[in-house]
Image (cartoon, rainbow, N blue to C red; front, side, top):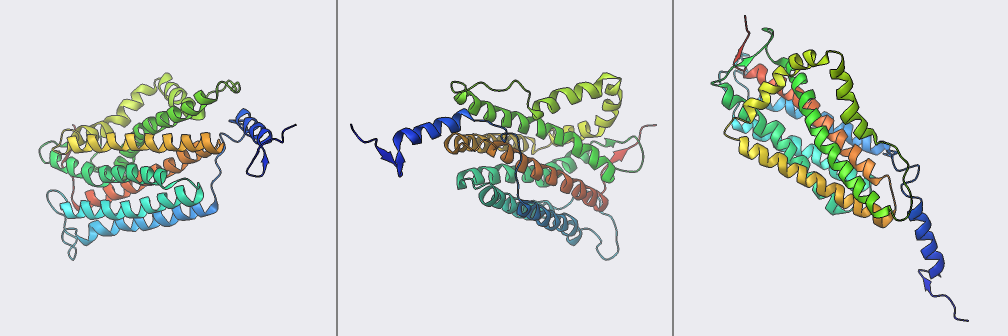
Length: 309
């Protein structure tokens, strides 16, 4: 009787059975669990503090009337927007690259996709967006419900609304990659009938909030974010902004798809949720930094605003 062929020191039959058992256990009870080390959170903390220093210090270094505290008329110099974007991008994308490579142990390709889409998001939020805002604001005033200016409060409302749009696109890309893996595994096992958390958040939460007259509050709260988006996307850099956001979405999808390929090869089912969570953390960090950045910039270069009577 012929001896079974051995692969990597084990019988072929045993290796095939082990692979089958691993595939049959996918996604398993760990598929939706996030497992990130303390080093990841330390990197996020350091990157956030460094980027926070950038968004506060850089505008003041080039700000108007540094010695007298005088305010400027018009828009911040392009150099301020460019320097802020580059420095914030270097700090945050460096931390993101290390997180993908060292914490998640994913290939360089996935890390580069992640760095590329984050770079485009940074360019939009700290460069193109503010530039377009000030460009159109010279001839179109922002309508405020009170005379306190945009400030941190108004910037926070804008950031929450814009982050919701980012989250919807980002969540849908994650679900697309997740389903691509599940589709490959449907012949091997039956999946539990449960809805993903992302889907529940995207669908049920807005319905509940808008149910009991919440649409009135939503209209009031979204007034300023809608004006901000209208100004940005009616500016001379609207086309570049749209291309950058579209490119960021494509690159994020490629990062998820490459991670899905690793899931199919390695059988590590929680890789996708970890990549999703890492990207989500950095998106939150960027929006928090943007709130501080806009508050600082608009305090030095006030926007053209009007309060309705």
